[in-house]
Image 1: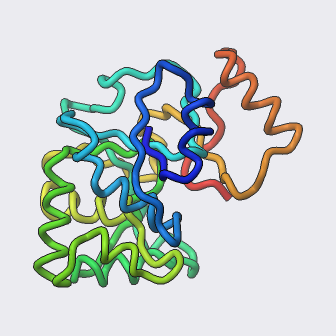
Image 2: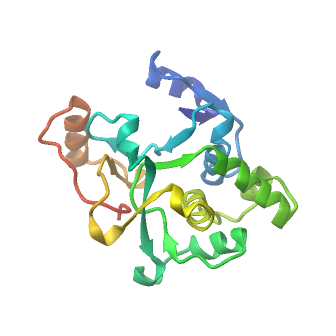
Length: 214
């Protein structure tokens, strides 16, 4: 688990002794700052594959590394941009960073698993295209002006397509491992009861829906 310096003590108490906690720097805009942490994830671990979940994503059943692979490759769910509505604020920043059109939204279904080599490739790309380190580039973007999972997915799709198993979001074929909530929406009584079931490991909790929370 990675957390900014501010609040790290409270996070450590909540996480307990069984969780390895890495403390990163504070950023003026932590929505962008937490994306920087993910894009430098290979510096926090020596694992060959890095699996990301956010604080509003909850596994509803036991998950092993084998669940993150299909045919020996990480799986990613994508949805064609043409199938999306008009509200897609992530698209222009992703295309501007990568310097090419992006045909899919890759932030459709968590968790998001990528080989460690992609992170260094993106940092090299940033230096080559934009002339600044990746952390400075992302932290300098306007609010909600970057999408780390779409940048990772679009780069993987363009540069390493054969190294992944790709699912179209409309197929419902990808493994469903965790639920995706919306942290800014708060927790009402119904959601609290649902989360209690998930934490308790109740088989009746089951999966609910796919794709982005809304």
